[in-house]
Amino acid sequence: MPAIPLAELLHLLVAAVVILRILSRRNPPGIAQAWILLVVLLPAVGVVLYFMIGERRLGRRWIERAERGRPALRRRFAEVIGAAGIERGIHADQSGAAAESVSKLVQSLTGLPPMRGHRVQLIDDGERFLHALIEDIESARQSCQLEFYIWSAGGLADGVVDALVRAVQRGVQVQVLMDGLGSRPFTRTPQYRRLRDAGIDVEVVLPVGALRLIVARADLRDHRKIAVIDDRIAYTGSCNLADPMLFKRDAGLGQWVDAMIRIEGPVAALLAEISSAMAELQHGRPRERSAQVVPAETASAGTVALQIFPSGPGFAFQDIEPVLLAAIYAARVEIVLTTPYFVPGEPLVTALCSAAARGVAVHLVVPRRNDSRLAQHASASYFEDLMAAGATIHRFPGGLLHTKSMVIDGQLSMMGSVNLDLRSFKLNFELSVLVYDRPFSGRLRTLQQSYMMVSERLHLPSWRRRPAWRRMLENAAQLASPLL
Figure 1 (cartoon, rainbow, N blue to C red):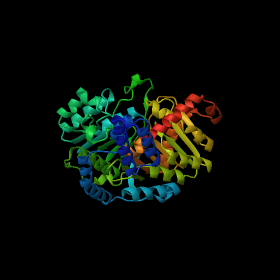
Figure 2 (figure 1 turned 60 degrees about the horizontal axis):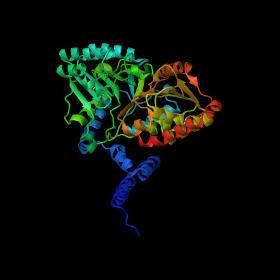
Figure 3 (figure 1 turned 90 degrees about the vertical axis):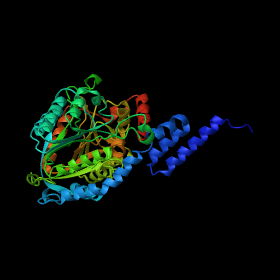
């Protein structure tokens, strides 16, 4: 019997060790099977990729900080929720079946109940958002906290920098967080140096580098979009800190189409705490906050009930997927979803097909062209099953539709940074806001309708006639989606 060459024996041993490691962890079957198949077929490539992106490793120091800071964060949440004048729960006339069940699930998972007393404004494009943000920063008296996945220099984004510099000069406490990968080009610009030189507390979250690859997974990102002014005004949604007229205009995709919500009310203080917690996780130092628990004038800024869902690896909360599933299964009349990236995995696709099959009007709006070819092809692989069940697919042609939104039965809305893909569900730090208000849901539904009116509606017979090579490409891309 011939001896096995040493190199082959080494390959077998390493592959076996990695496979045992994969099996020792609680992964969804599809993800585990994809990694095992890759390691078996391409041992060298599979092993390297697995240790680079196969596990949600944040590094020992980061996890220790998260464990130490978790009780303090929950205490701070409890202080905000229990502040005088704050009402909890959903208004009776807004609490349909979906809203009731979803709010209970979110509170069970996060400990954060729905809170009343908010005024909420829907901002339907990036330029309006940046103008509004600059105006609020100019009016800040105590604090400004900004946390964005992408900062990009130029245009109105430079106006935000100018406003922050002026704010810190008049004594406002300013903190800026930006993701180490998404904002990496910005850290080499004069605008970044202006923030630093002005004395602003700037934190680059999860910085990338060769050394970090040894201890942590490089593509775990802070994907949130949050701005909080004086703990009383907050913004969140899909907009990065970038002028939409300038951002990635050379990519050939047109302007990015986004939406944000401006919130006045007690939830703003919770969002400030979430950003502070992220900063502490990065630098390890507790932050001294000058603002009140909840400004008195903010406890009842309006009538809208809101609930927030922060998520991320090691962040003490589960991912958002169970909440999406609960909302979809609770829907009785209509589900409308907009997302730039639709690679959700089988549970969510099954829920949407089930809803469509029982007579719920299911509408999915995605961009016609995407900045990720892999995501675009993987997304298309789900369309036939959805349409066969009765769902309607709309492909938006007017730029890269980046708005992440959901409206259920006209009574429950969700907006935030979460894409309908496994990366947002499992890997990124994200934020979602659930709005229990029929008038706001109506405004968001009108915005979604404006996207659908200019979109191409897919039809099942013609979709089934697409070339065989495209079908194979889409299915191959879907196979890779669990590895992302």
